[in-house]
Length: 113
Length: 113
Image (tube, rainbow over all chains, first blue to last red; front, side):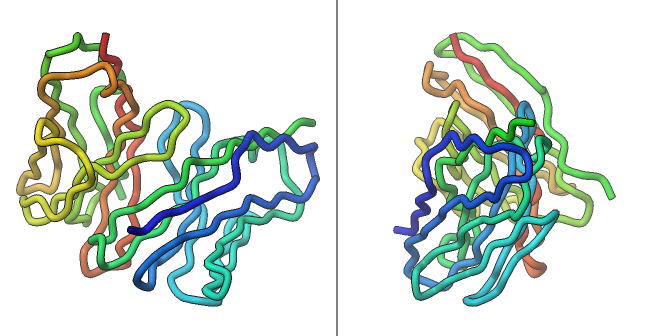
């Protein structure tokens, strides 16, 4: 079945450092790919998405490109801020699963001043 | 536009009891999905409701059941609670026929003792 694998955390970075969180997926169809963010004590917020190969999703300085050839959707940000500290989840959905989201285990990011 | 709301925020139950969690969809959405997020894990899909019927189910036993009402709000019922049911329960709404993006509520934290 479909699955998502993302890098284990926690990731600790200094403010203004470059961020990469790796995400790879396995899917039989043509999924849409998502990054969600969860701040402490809160629910999930959609950060960005891409619905087909070579699409780039972007929001709030974060970017991710849907790479079908490497089945990847890595999250990047050029300069992180303390306020970016959160848990980041990579997820996919497709028509075969009724568009239910299939999540990775999450990567915790801590940004220090 | 009203976002997804969930009640209650926190709940403590005893093993063997039954619990009902509630969710109000975002305005204009017709589909509700429920997810279970254990501590330190990614959310796991429980089931989805569309037009008041179950429209997909994850790997959860029948003691997890749900309802969707004509106003698209929803309930998650869990019978015979087990300690492992302790988790954050997230509700997400979306629009079938739209972009299928899922918007999450803040969650209900269930503790089973």
